[in-house]
Image 1 (cartoon, protein in one colour):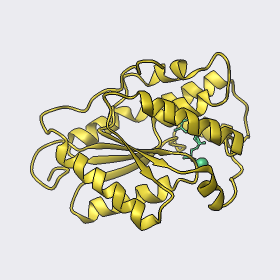
Image 2: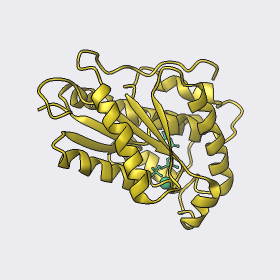
Image 3: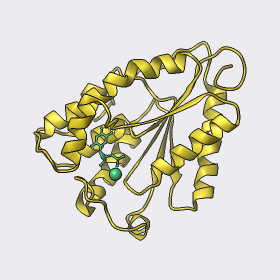
Image 4: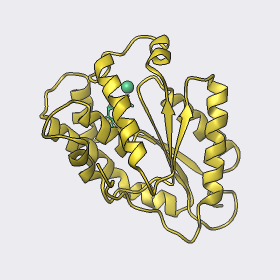
Length: 225
Ligand code: FDM
Ligand code: MG
């Protein structure tokens, strides 16, 4: 059985991006379950994948247990995607829909948001070029007011107001510059049910649209970055 419940064909690569507290993980889990319940093959992965050797370095950095140069940690986040890229490609080729919680967009935007003068968005995007390209990228958009209502920040690095508001601006610039990528912005300030319905609509459209004959694309450079 293929991704859409028919024979043959490849799966769709669906990325979910957004700020902390936008509800990415709960929506991804729900989407994963609903795809499986509708008889489709689906897998859910998240970045950073903290289980690999590289992921453990990232985890320790995020928890504030280690210090790393901004460029070094940036490249580790990217390497953490590259080490899983092949398995994503083979899942997709085998007909499984892959849902990814955070991807290269978070990678570029969070690093660039630190304001290091030698680490701008353009530099940050470079190591992402060539990774599997999403067939759909859902941006769960949430206002700072709504995010604040959802409770305080956790204790990890980047979980503070100044960083989040820079991240918000940079997500808009990056998504505004994307030309050949299917980006769908969804208002994540609505109820869980409403958001999951909006997600399900764009995901079903995407799965129906994925051309079984055309292979998964690769991320390209972003013009104007
Ligand atoms: N993050 C995540 C990055 O800085 N770069 C990346 O490439 C990725 C995938 O890691 F603050 C940041 C975003 C967030 C933190 O992610 C951990 P979760 O999803 O909040 O656990
Ligand atoms: Mg977080």
